[in-house]
Image 1: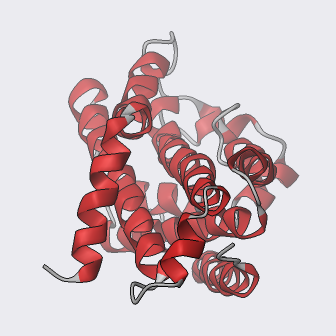
Image 2 (image 1 turned 180 degrees about the vertical axis):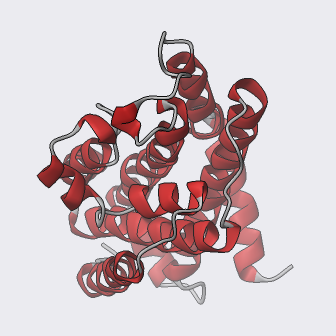
Length: 244
């Protein structure tokens, strides 16, 4: 077993010792979907949702919940805690590069996020007959770019935070707008037009996810903007990152 695999195994065990975030990352989005679907009118077609049912239009917003929670709450706190405890500094003096630790943390959280998203899609289809994405390739590409951009923001928060508490504060700056523009607090069809247009390009890409879902076709500019967020966020996080 190579170094990265060993560190990933160890970090997975540590992550599961306090399983709240793992359980929440996998189960919470699906549970929220079930609760929202039980609201009267959510499973009926609505002109405000472009003729779709609100539950159909709201499923991509559940993806936002999963990614935002893990990328902007869990990752920054975990990495900043390692810096605060001197773990990164001690690793820097060994042949094991601290980047292995960051890579392991990212891998664990991405797997949990994808597991939660997969469960949500399955529950939506089984409980409310929400169709699966009609353009799966576009959906997968948008999800990839959205995931990278969200976790880049999380690492950016971790890069400038000295403590786990301050990391949560920095991450909150991105967390609240992401949830708002992603239609979590209020369904996107009910937002004012200008806010919907802004939300069309805000990571993790709620609108292109929905367009790929219903088969409307994803606008290339939206993917370009998501890619720019992903590249710029990752580069800036790497530039600002401190091991101690």
